[in-house]
Amino acid sequence: MTTEHDLEGRRAIVTGGASGIGLACAHEFARRGAHVIVADVNAESADAAAAAVGGEPWVVDLSDTRSLESLSLEADILVNNAGIQRVAPITEFDPENFRLLLRLMLESPFLLIRAVLPGMYERGWGRIINISSAHGLRASAYKSAYVSAKHGLEGLSKVTALEGAPHGVTSNCINPAYVRTPLVEKQIADQARVHGIPESEVVEKIMLTETAVKRLVEADEVASLAGWLASDKAGMVTGASYTMDGGWTAR
Figure 1 (cartoon, rainbow, N blue to C red):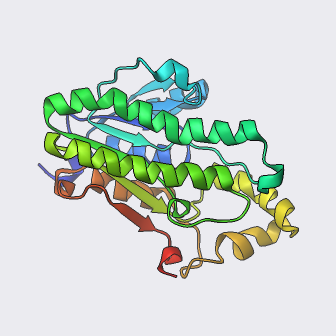
Figure 2: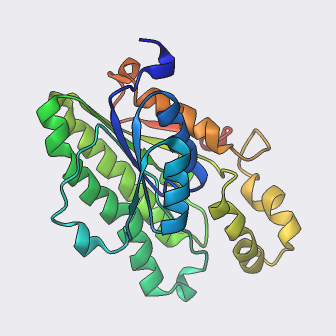
């Protein structure tokens, strides 16, 4: 079996799969032969993305965590990618926004992992890939909810790795710096406001200040690592956090 079709016969669920990193992962897995379920809150975007990769859409609001508690899912690969961002000082941070980010980016990954593990255990094979962030390993001001959620995701991923190991299931995090996605583009205005600088200066002065390589990460770069983590070649890789941050966390 060539690398080109090394995921033939696998079912992959990708959350936030209609844009950005999720869409890039959907294309990567589909190219390698997997059947991809594109999970997204936007029905039109989910339909379009699923059609583009020959997969199927799953329109779901993952922040509605109560509805996920009794879920049972059949998948060989789960990519927990869905996320949003809110930028504000702690003293001004809306408590409901804080809870929203934790539900979407920590509670829902837990519930989705919980839903796919029984089937993975039964088949003796599975891949949990959590799209974390450099902010899963480091903090930045004004991002209390995002940093808290990503730090929590790191812990969840490691516990999943320990529990899944006897059953052939791996669990890992990918930790990119700022990726060229709609999520990052939406942050620019917020960052400009809280830092008191023009929007034109945000990428250079805020987003790239910590990285040694002075550019944004591309979504397909993240997807290529996700594709490898989903392969049989990565069977001994578990409980790890793979930085793709241009040297940010090397400091």
